[in-house]
Amino acid sequence: MQRSPYFLNVKSSACGQAWLDALDIQGVNNARAISQKFGLPDQLARVLSARDVDESEAVAFINPTLRTLMPNPESFKDMQCAAERIVKAILNQEKVAVFGDYDVDGACSSALVARFFRYFGMEVKIYIPDRIVEGYGPNEQAMRMLVQDGAHLIITVDCGANSPDAIKAARLAGADIVVLDHHQMSEVHQEAMALVNPNRPDDFSGQGHLCAAGVVFVTLAWVHHLLRKKKFKGKLPDLLSMLDLVALATICDVVPLQGVNRAFVVKGLQVARSMHNLGIAALTKVARIGEPLNSFHLGFLLGPRINAGGRIGDQALGARLLSCEDKEKADRIAEQLNQLNQERQEMEGIQLTQAEFHIDSLYQESETPRSLVIAHQEWHPGIIGILASRLKERFFCPVFAIALKEDGSGVGSGRSMSGIDLGALVREAVTLNLLEKGGGHSMAAGITIQSKKIETFREWLEDKVSLMVSQLRAKKSLNIDGCLSASGANKELFEMIEKAGPFGSGNNTPVFVLPSHRLIHLSEVGKGHLRLVISNIEGKKLQGIAFRAVGTALGDFLFANIGETIHLAGNLSLNYWNGTINPQLRVIDAATVV
Image 1 (tube, helix red, strand yellow):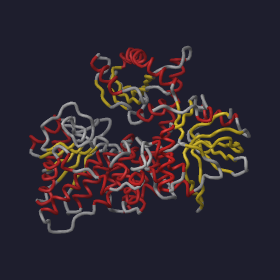
Image 2 (cartoon, helix red, strand yellow):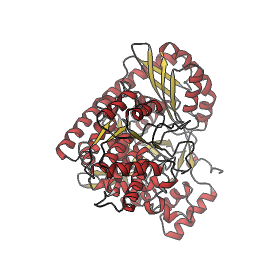
Image 3 (cartoon, one colour):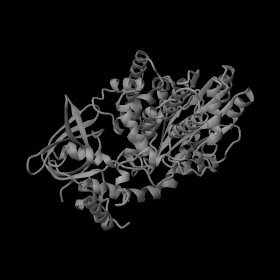
Image 4 (cartoon, one colour):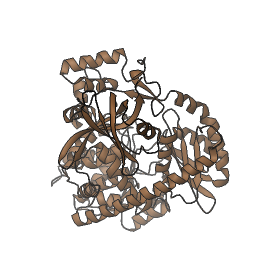
């Protein structure tokens, strides 16, 4: 698709990127047709067109429903076997154990399964492994322990697809194992009774974009169907009332918001706003969210608090909270997670400062690195993923942050940029014996490395990605969905734009430019954020917020242009404060008026 010229002639913004029109001529014509046919605002029509929604698809796109988007469960490999085994457990009132991952997707998936079984009065044990001691996924000792505790059926969620030895151990100990996962697989093991994973090589469901909670929901929907078919005597659980957990996992696991995932989030947010889940209600309270829950709240306020338990505290806190039916207990766990999240933020700040000092010492006399491999003996393994992500955003290059151990080894977490497949690089480094082990996908990876090989790995990575990073930096750009003015930025327009959501991975939040607005106020708030007020030529004012902008190129540009007329790019949002609702711009870039 041929791109239009630079948007507002911005070739290099405050963040060092060109602004490009998200639509070419064909896209503009499509947007015009959508707007005219359905009477939609031009801004919404442009957003839809920029996401390759044509005139015939517009109405369905802004009204995603489970009825039209829910996949056929029978299209998943092993689904029938998995569902029938779960039905058998329900009919026989067997003792069931759930083995989950320690992230948000794992917690939500575990809570989904536990809530479903407990509806039938069944005993369910949730087991979440210790991130540092046990690591990711099922291990033989834990699986055998679950069998010894009486579990006849073990369901692994958000893990298990690549753990044949642990699953074999549980099978030999006398339990049946059903795996519900979504991670990439190179080979399919035969140790589980059923392995449902849309990303297994022999699955042709086309649902590889689901998170684990999405896979669990589809599975439970088929169990629900089979129970009705068997004329189950008794009331069945309301699966739709559990969609808040699916929405939370879908947003926090950053899976593409396409297909049924859009319906999961739209419908799940409606459920979440009812505060039906005591855990979500308690977490919303401690996070001080005083407005209707949206995708931003799930991903940036609730998710990090749930993850805090898995990073630096009790790994099972998140799953216990989301499956809790006791309000006082839910409130206590939420407070504990909130405290852990504050500690995590403090640790993150310290580690980020240490990392920046380390980077300065490594590269002070050379040009900007095309990759970063940094290590420290005091870093917490639960924080390095966040650290790598922060540094990737700041330096716009692949980053590995490594926590060193006393035995001379280190565990690392990597984050990449679009266009560089980090998972492929890690697999190659393993074959070259630069890494002990490692795996991941294009944007994120985990590694284990000997400290004596870090420098060699750093040099190898720099050599591998140097040219690609330079090319990507030269092409760094920001796609602009359209223009707004302070006069036109209002609650009604925001709500209309939201119809093209939910926004996130695979459906980016629309970026609008407010051209030639005067920056009349700027001040630091919170931890490194900037609060600002802008006005247009008519004197109409609009508030804005630039998150984590202090000390960045964007923050420096804004401070240097107080009182000046500039272009600002960002996402339209609403600010709820003291009972009032006002439009607000989340500023992500700015530029000089040419």
